[in-house]
Length: 124
Image (cartoon, rainbow, N blue to C red; front, side, top):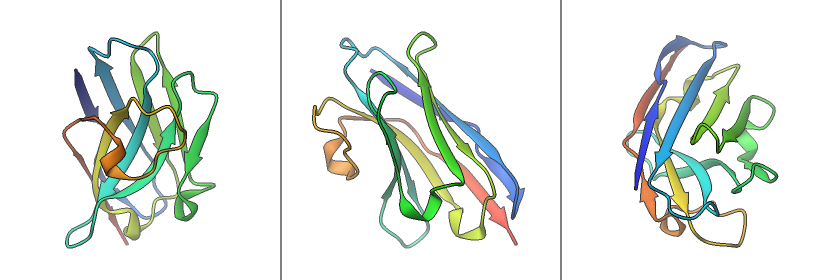
């Protein structure tokens, strides 16, 4: 199983980025995909997740209305569209997959597989 996150970068406040998470090797289709972030000196926190068929999503309150999550199982890729970025969004962003049936799962221990992080830096 491999998850590969990409799309991070440096933007000014108010800008946009789209993160991608390509997931491969998942033998069952029933995996939810989650996005997490970790800022320096802080714990990893759940940002958003999407269920196995894209029919259910969760978004952290602080990013509601600014971020959108989606996935394409045909492309084995999940996306996190981030608009109106704020300096507080600066962090390393990770994607992860969970086999757990109950949705949403917002805590890191619930996730079985993790990708490497991608840095998002938002300047004021």
